[in-house]
Length: 280
Image (cartoon, rainbow, N blue to C red; front, side, top):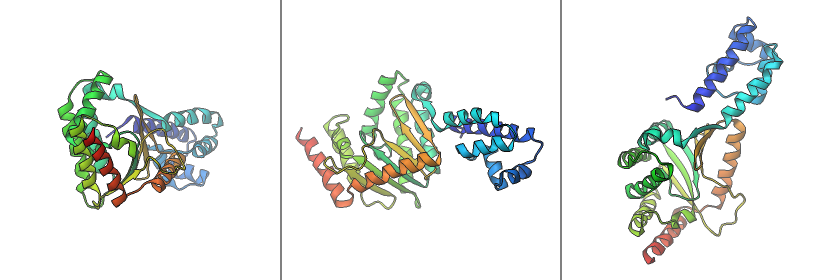
């Protein structure tokens, strides 16, 4: 499935191919000039790998076009912060977006994620998801296909029962206390989280409110197969796959994980939130 990000990477690859062709060298000869494996030249030209800054600068020199480096680097900067605006994505409703996520999660083997304000979609109950999606449709002024979107989100959760998958998810304790849809809906959602503890495909951690923090991220994020980071803001979905960004988000997740609790300790925090919901 093509995405804005992949389309941008393919466009950059096509430009690299044009510069290489202008030299009169084939892929093998150009790779030799660069001192690279031929496969790397092929992957970059075909949009199967994201170039680094050093890669693009070397390519421009090898093509005897140092003047082209600035354009290539500008394309890379745009690609590394590839945006998919929610208003455009939600133009046809939420269900198509959820269907895309179903496909992306099926292709993913391992995932690391962090959510500071909401229970992740992968773990949501239908009632909890229904209230969130109805609220979002109103906020974004998008078509209200809530029931179809909820069904798609529930299909995404089928990956939790597939052998060989691993979802390492951290949730800020505050998200357990943010009541969505009323007391009964929230109680059911917290019970659902308890049921996930101990699953072979899920590692659920809760970052306690009183934890000693080595990092305080401002937003949630998801790392897909250690190859791509997805960040959702109020109006935009951002994707990053550069080595530097992957390493940075990996370090942030590791530090959050060090502050998190799991197993019986996570169970106690969820139970505490459950008791507070019932007492309201």
